[in-house]
Image 1 (cartoon, one colour):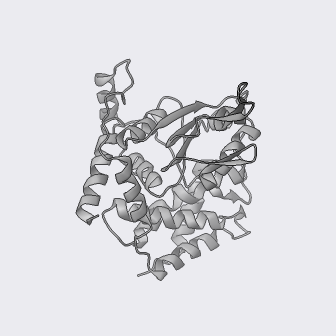
Image 2 (cartoon, helix red, strand yellow; image 1 turned 180 degrees about the horizontal axis):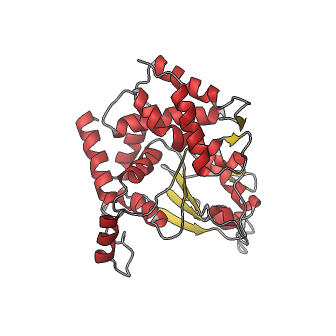
Image 3 (cartoon, helix red, strand yellow; image 1 turned 135 degrees about the horizontal axis):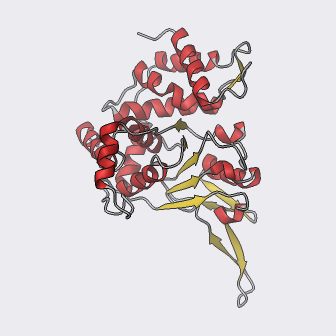
Length: 313
C-alpha cells in the first residue's frame, strides 16, 4: 500500500469518528493507535462523557463486529466466554460462543465484576483465544478489548490487579468537552444512538493491512535504546515499587510504531515514543511511597522520568 493511500485511510477514519466524538481529536487518535497496534485500551472516566460511543464509533467506522458486556458482581466467566451445552439428540456437547467472539468487545465498568470474571479476559487479551473444557477456540481478527471504569467510585468494585492492567496497551480518559463542542452536542442531540447512521470508511480487510504495516515501520537502534532506558528508569526501587515489565516495553514499541504510521511516516522518531509514554506506561507502575496515588500522579512521575532520559539525535 502506498503511503499516500495509507494516510488517506487513516485521516478518513479519524474524521469519521470525530464527527461523533466532538472536540476530542487526541482521544480519537489514541483509540485508532490502539487498534492499529493490535492492543487493548482502558478508558478511565466519569459516566456520560462518551466512552461507549467512542467504542461503537470505532467499530462502525471500520466495519467490525461489536458487542458490549455490562460487568456486574454476578457476571460469570461463562457469560463472557461461552458455554458447552449438551445436545440431547447426539449426546455430544456443543460450544455456544459468548460475546468475547467479536472484533471489538466493550467491557463496560470492568471493575464491577469479581476477580474471577475479570481474569476470564486474560487469555483472550494475551493470546487471542479462549480455552473452554480443554479445547482452544480462536477469536476473530482483528480483536480488541476496550474496557471502562469510573476512577471516582469504589463502592462495590474490585480494582484491577497489576497482571490485568499489564494486558492493556493503553490507558486514556475522554474528559469533559469544551464549550463549543458541548453546545454542538446539545444542538444535535437525539434520543437515537449517535452512531446509528455512521458508515464504514475502511473495510475489515483494509484494517488488517494497516495493522500489518505497523510491524514494517522502521525503528532505529537509537530509538530502541531510548525506549529501554525509559523502561529501566521505571524500575528504580527508590521511586517505584513496581516497574514496567518486558510486556510493557513491547507495547511501547508497537504503539510508537502505530503512532508513526498515523502521523504518515514509515519510520519512528523520538516524538513517537514521547507522545505515547504516559498512556502506555503510567498504569503499569506502582509508586514506592504513594501506592494509592491514582492515575494523575502516576502520569506526572512517568513524565518526570521522561525528562531525565536523554533524547537520541
